[in-house]
Amino acid sequence: MGAGSLGGAGTTAGTMRLYDTARREVVPFAVGEVVTMYTCGITPYDATHVGHAATYLTYDVLQRRLRDLGHQTRCVRNVTDVDDDLLRKARELGVHYLDLAAAETARFDADMEALNIIECFSEPRATSAIADIRGFIGMVLDRGHAYVAGGAVYFDVSSFAGFGQISHLNRDTMLALAAERGGNPDDPNKRDPLDFVLWQPSAPDEPAWDSLWGPGRPGWHIECSALALRELGTTIDLHGGGADLIFPHHECEAAQSEAATGERFVRHWMHQAMVMMDGEKMSKSLGNLVFVSDLRETWDPRAIRLAILANHYRTSWEWTEDTMPAAEARLDRWVAATVETAADSAEAVDAVRAALDDDLDTPAAVAAVDTAVAAGAGVASAAALLGVFLTGEPVR
Ligand code: 5CA
Ligand code: ZN
Image (cartoon, rainbow, N blue to C red; front, side, top):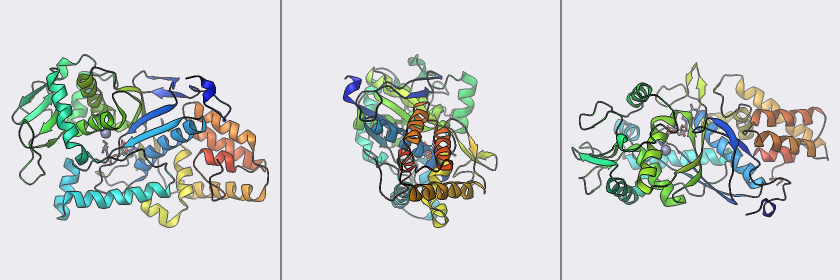
């Protein structure tokens, strides 16, 4: 497809440059008219925090720029509605795990809508994919990349030469991270502690589905492989998620997908750096959280967007009590300039596009809008490229 068939935006296909985690450099993001994306979604056992929001905002701004360039985007975001953490929380609360998941997913969707995140192409639940997962595991077994032991199915890491192609970690670091992130390296049924579970027997009070290998439930990584294949096909343009997922989640996902299909799984890996609070990764398990739903009670959701977009997606940053007041003050300046001025700054639009094309540099884009505002220009169109609608309705 020629670049000329895309457009109206004055730019050509392949304009954007993005850092690729696997290649470890900023490269042209070469894509066709339709761009397929998969981003790892929430495990719905608690409310959405600013770290989650940062991850989904990054892929939202990416999609907005791709659409501005004339592409269609199809972004799938899963919901992990069966998982150790969710089952534990449901047990603690004395509720059915699917009721907890449904309630938290509804809260998440409301937060995403308030933040003006583009609706997903699909938002499939892991439990919608049990049949797909069983079929997928069959493919991995048939190709000789997995083995059955103790009612579980394990991926055989030694059978797959590409293991490590995304994270580039050495074996000791992989082992340490697997232990820390639920990989259970001491499981005696494993031939190698780095082997990971595709299917596992359920504990007596956990949900179980029948399978050829005995009743049980999926391992974590397999849902994303099975859903990406089901929803988007064998090879996807871009895979996203937080940088905490690079290992083991994405490394294992890529290994099992490529083992199952024999084809390349992902053309471009893009990861959001961690949002921190009190010097540590903001996380449900640590409890150092700011919930989006709480912020929405006090602040304009557009200011929440700006607070996050003032930071580059590849740089970890700290949430502080000054973050929201500064963002809302910026929003007020942008709105005031835009309402008072008839002329919409074309320079700001060009500068925002150029900044986004340069590895999605949202801080530079925000600064360009600030400059236009300081010069007295209106910035409705430039702000709309960032998903911030200053005049009520989207301008483009
Ligand atoms: N359901 C899995 C992915 S398949 C999961 O990791 N769920 S989650 O609820 O823990 O995280 C949802 C998304 O938010 C993931 O992409 C994760 O990498 C990202 N995330 C979690 N904490 C942070 C943080 N502090 N900063 C940035 N992104 C984060
Ligand atoms: Zn995932």
